[in-house]
Picture: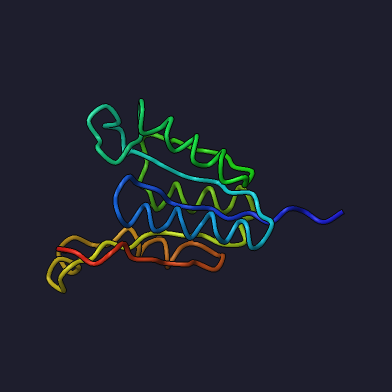
Length: 137
């Protein structure tokens, strides 16, 4: 018996997170895969605007249910998103990781570092990176 493929998506409620989720759902359909959506917070979940709670969380769960893709929603708190995604990939044996990229200036990339860069250097499976719609950086 062969195992079901797994697609992991790093999701935040932003245009880049929306793009990652849409591509992740499409890839899960295409591959007949289970979808693991990770929405994490470093520990300030009560004030973290990118950590889903309440109605936005219910809307995401409804959207994933309607998609018809088997899914798991992980909402860890306390660690860096790069570590959480790397762990999700490792624990599930993911076949693909989908992340959204933030648009930054060259100076912003230099000064701020990049979770995406840490993910690209750490994760052992193929990674699909997507951008949200064009707009201000």
